[in-house]
Length: 251
Image 1 (cartoon, rainbow, N blue to C red):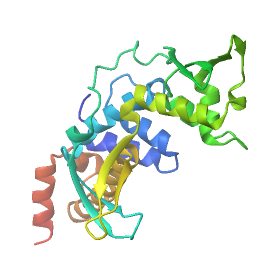
Image 2 (cartoon, one colour; image 1 turned 135 degrees about the vertical axis):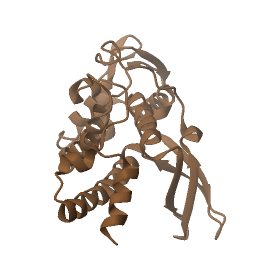
Image 3 (cartoon, helix red, strand yellow; image 1 turned 30 degrees about the horizontal axis):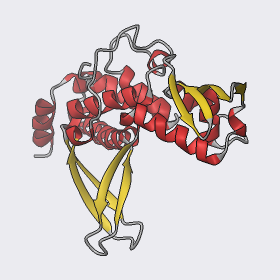
């Protein structure tokens, strides 16, 4: 992974404005992974994708994370601080052509008298179920990722499985790809209620980049108006030099 230039990051942000959260995550990774197109990156497991998003977040903003959560019991707002290392479940390996091939590795599970084979969900699966009409998202995802179900050797349709078995499959999938679902254990200082809050690195990083992009465009506007420089020249400057010019422009 390489640090994306300001121009490349702005372009990825601009392209993602009208896209789904999944497309946005892929656009950000494509900006920093040479040869990694969005379509190819969509074949990574969701956990592998999010591990790379954590690494990108470290490159752009560091490993310290400051977030806000709300107690589901009393509504108290909590400041939450942690490190990206605290929520890392898997290392970031080099992405190559082999790692971006469609996921085919089979996982096996026996639950409720059913023998089940499935594969780990990818961004391609998330994109596909986002356009599935009339089907509950969890079931739509299972229908794509569960490759075989048998009961006493007889094939069974995924939509015929009882809720308890569907829950077991979902839990096993989460265990097989733990980076795909990051949970923070929180306790409310006001009412002592304890709960697990989901941390969505894709959404969190996008919000940070959105705020950064707005600031960057304001800086470009200021410097272009004062000095008449082109956007490309301003973006090519180091952040430190840009700040010095901004300070001079305001004097």
